[in-house]
Length: 487
Figure 1 (cartoon, rainbow, N blue to C red):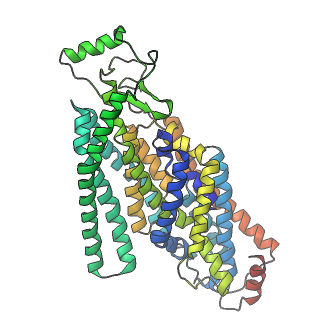
Figure 2: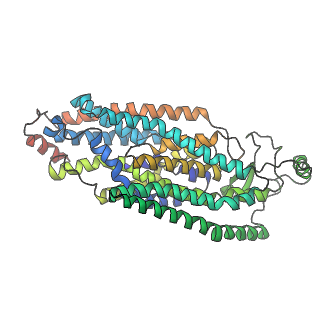
Figure 3: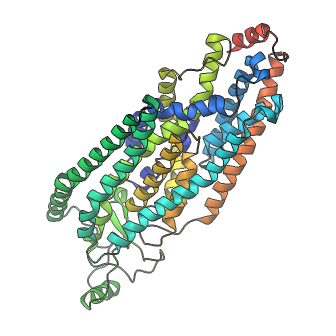
């Protein structure tokens, strides 16, 4: 299951923009996905295991084998659908598929009265609100970068001045949300929350000071060294020469006191050159800046922020989506060990570690397809746009996890990418609305497909295993023994 979940892993923006390679993405996913699942995964997994449908419902209390079989069917249907969608490059939601599957076997076997409809409504509303919230946060974050840095008279100097603020703010928000959730799990004492927020403030302050006194001076020295070594030289045919009329027009605009728009560069490190575009994203190059090297340096300053946000997003993805994927296995293990599904308890660490391994393998095998859709096809992302999209996503998913809501990281990321794409600039391309509409339709279809496939698998297995429905409050030993032989 987690092998298929990896296809929708949410660090595709980092890989698609060229901030990190696929190998580095694998390392980040292996470490922080499992860390997020082990520290905060229990918040969401508890919702999947017992909050939507209570295993203590009279029907499932008398027939725990049916509850375990239903969870197995939901996992199987999710795996099949995610595998198919990933071949198409669609970032569909693991959460939508799992929830649809759980609703299927419960409603068809025990009726809708067995389902906690209030909880389901809250989850569905979170699926609508979370992409919008992710888009809004990403829009505001990139809007600040666009306004205060990329549109400044001296974007390089402004970027260096504001980098400590962006680093400290990013760490403060994410660490604060995570610390609050973990403190709530560990202790109900108000002192635990006070310590969590106090520690967050100290960490954010330290991050800002280290960035200001260590990282920024290092970046300046590296840029100066790179300039003298001519590390950013390009072939003459790739850039306009002094005799080029476009270059003369840009130079005249700068010398005459006109405003030079530094938000006109799309960076591709893998190609080793600076690609020029107009502010509208068209082929016209009337706004080519004179200081190309200067502009490239501005965008690269967000590369490390984008990597930092990739770490955050891997962590919250593990805490939410991976917990969704392994929660049904917790039900199956409880049934295998105790003969019922009411034992409760945390999901064993080795199950979470197995999920982490599945994430890495799935990301390596087919993850690139979905990464290209999220990181390139919806809208072309620069480092600054990618940072804003990822941080907005991580903040939204962290809040959802703290509220014990199983939301979709991939859906939130798509909303965040759309949010940054609404701001025009040459460090990105126009939003591809056709692709976005196709993704949204896939989200709706995922819930229905998960419901239909789970229903088919559930009743097929029930028929094959000759499981008979026992009335409530009667002994279900025979049924339990039959399914245990299979599991």
